[in-house]
Image (cartoon, rainbow, N blue to C red; front, side, top):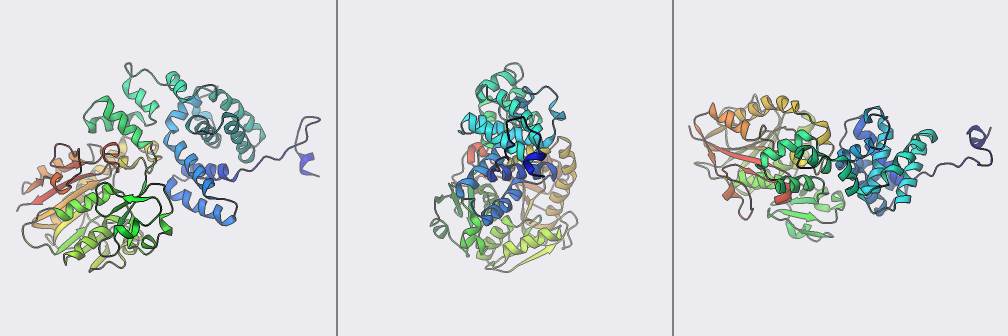
Length: 472
């Protein structure tokens, strides 16, 4: 029996095979992996793109469109959910997740790109026929035709409450963040509508790829020879790739002489390395070293001064990533699998200690947009004991006169100042160092002595750093 005769169709209308669009199928597969496996798009997408290129017929423009569809859909998921909910006749939770992924991809094409309306709808319906079947493709067609009746501003005027009535819910829908995240970020900023809107919008922008030239192994001049490469804004070792590109194709990156590292992370390492010490400067510790970006920069900086870096990471497989990042470091170093909350080394062994603690990751929502939908307020309670224990372990590990850097990729006050304040209340022989002078030329670092970086002010992840000197 032929394929056509097996398919039901109206008399006089022969069955037409759905058009398989590799770009949109790839984008759908990436979204399903993010949803089903709790994967991150920045880990799922590159191998999918690589496999598509190896098959042939998938060019640079295809990769760019697939990337935009995936990240654009994830960043604006909250907004698109509110719009789609207004166009369906059932609660959104009752729509099958694969169907919702196709609808979200279609909504992004209609409301967030320059793809013509008819092309966005027809391509989404064809995708639905391929991955969902003809029956649900009709549902997709009906919903997206309703979505297409307004542009994004028109929909926001309909589905978002007025700012004056409910400012947090308004911002949550307009800027596609969970309400609790809006509230937390607003508290961290200290109020004001302009600042929070700028921050939320910055979270929805596609970040540039930033490289770090590891001292003694590469220099920025080598990296600046790459296409569309410009110097970093703040770090002397940073180079930005303004048009994206494939970092793995760069010799210095492939050889670990350079790496991909947000400029905020570079600044944290530089501030710790530049903090004034009383006494020797010979032994450095990275107490939460995985996956190795800060450790590689610290190791290179330590080598310039004749110091030795110990990079410790609790998880053995992540310790392996650290070892790979540090391989070829110009000076001596050691990588160990060790728990920073129960340090296996003697107390007071180190002159400088960094602990970049596990956190909610709310400071990196530009790079991992799906994290905003996975995190819950109760996650803060789960991280809190570990963050405090790691800081206590770091303070035990540093000698008198030495310096500890407490860092986290979150601006949430519960993960930043609350942790530092709580631990230092129990440690009277410590003092906070003003970190701001250690980042010359970087504006808007706050009232000090700690520093908070922001995507909308600095173009970096929202990294936090407190520098603490042990005094006795």
